[in-house]
Amino acid sequence: MGRYYRVAWLLCSVCIATTSLAFEREGDSSERESERESSAGGRERGGRFFNAFWTPYVQPRIGQSPAAESNGGASAEETPTAVIVETRPWRDDGFFGFGFPARQPWWKGPNVCNFRQEVDDAKESNGTVPFSFNFQSKQCQDTEDAFVCTTKIRTMNESKTITEKYVCCHGFARGRNGRAGCVQVNLKDLVTTMKDLGASKFVDLVEESKMADEINKGNVTLFVPTNIALKDFEHTNEVSSPHDGQAAVRAHTVEGVLRTGDMTDEMVLQTIDGRSSIRINEFYNPAKLMTANCVPIVSANNPATNGVVHVVDETLPSPNRTLYQIIAEDPRFSTLRSLLSMANLEDSLQNAQGHYTVLAPSDEAFSKVHKDTLAKWKNGDACIGKLLRGHLLNHVICTTAVPGSARVRNVNGDPVTLTRDGERLLADGSAISERDLVATNGVLHVLDHILMSQDSKPLMQTLRDAKMADLVHLIESANLTESFEGLDNFTFFAPSEEALKEVSLSEWEELKKSGRLAETLRYHTVPGQLLTPRGFFNNMLLGTALGEERPIRVNVFPRVFSFERPTVTAQCARLLSASSPVCGGAVYVVDKVLSPPAGNVLDILES
Image (cartoon, rainbow, N blue to C red):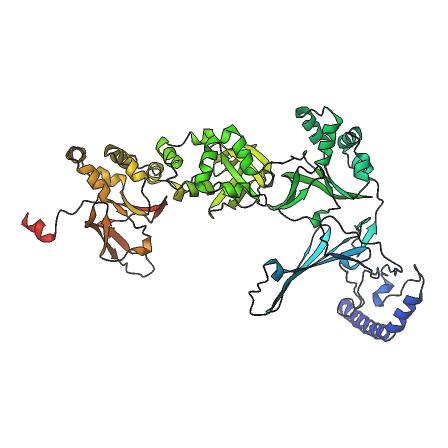
């Protein structure tokens, strides 16, 4: 019986709500008019059916909003507009018209400033508009201190990007009660704000260096180290005069008011000392981390009367050299410096507009490489360009952004894995002995080993790494090491260790004494052709290092099922592996030692 009463009560509630909604819509216009005529803080507006249980807070706002302030990150084309809306956080229609309250987004409330920037992309790209169709997209993102919408318009006649940004006007902050708009905060001067944030040591530095008046006379952004960070800095860097203190404060100060919402990844800010810069980077691994010169920002967007304070975990480095200058002036990188010109990387590392990460091998790291390989590198051979580009990343990667592991790509497009093992940081297994040397165009980390991708290794190094010691010994015995190290654009058929053992020691000795060992090994080399597995076809003849008249015959035997990989043979020796890339070539392991042909079939029958 109770169930029927509940159903009846629900039906009555729906009928009453519908009637209430109809009456309210009928008198909606008159009610709005009466609201406009009421004074500031006037009567509260009556609710709907559910207002008998819950009356939302309503207080229309009358008057002007605070003046929007253009911050240091806004361009001259941005036009700030104060957005004034009624501070009623519930929409009129509610949920399906039943009067359930629905929240307004915070950026539609009062005390929110709107910045709009329109960029003519056609002008930026020298007037070319490559679109033959109309296209428009809009993407919005809600960050901790801003709501940003980017609209891209592409037509035959125009190409432009419109960016709209909604932020709390200066002196206001987003409320914590979930209501729309921003609430007024009690602003203090920069020095007091820093004291309240617990940065008393930096305040002492400001006052001792007589910098308080300078930072208070204009709009500035301060990156303030914590007390612990500044204490560590004082232990290793003596501040001997007020001039040193002024330089330290200025190196942490930027003109203009810059919230984190105004900052973008790889953004470079010039400090007021005029000699150094602060590079902003954003990382997601998985949580968001924002850094300034690779130092984490631990407390952001603390407003003051004439600026904003960001607390950082360490004192900021003051870069005034490019990556190339750091390498050229540090004696630990003499070998790396001598090789950069051979890889055509000097210009990139001197480019002031760049944003690179250099995983820089020290001279000690180069000393661990085989002497023959190192000699080839110094002569400009053996894929030195590809090797060094494997140590260069196109983006700034700070080590603080690697809590466990991260995978990035170098400029060759190959992956590099960064992992943290306690206090140690590794790059593809090579230890980073010194980290986060900040330059004006990127950051440098010192490695204790060379990063060698498979396709940057020369043939002999590849065979050594593959544990093919017997084959390496035969090549060295035949005095072919230098010849094989210099190969380029080639294919090499490498007999497996088991295949080499099928030939007796006496036979190898006989080949060596007769001078035919070098001939046999050179027969396994196909110069001038870098063959992929799909490049083989049946009855293919490959000219060898012994000449076109002594070729290798390739045969391809399809399997029963089409999806199975066909069997490929070279001189009836089966290919055991797919291609292993090496510097300038490809290596295939075969299950037999290839013997140069002694003649045609008739010659063999006659003999």
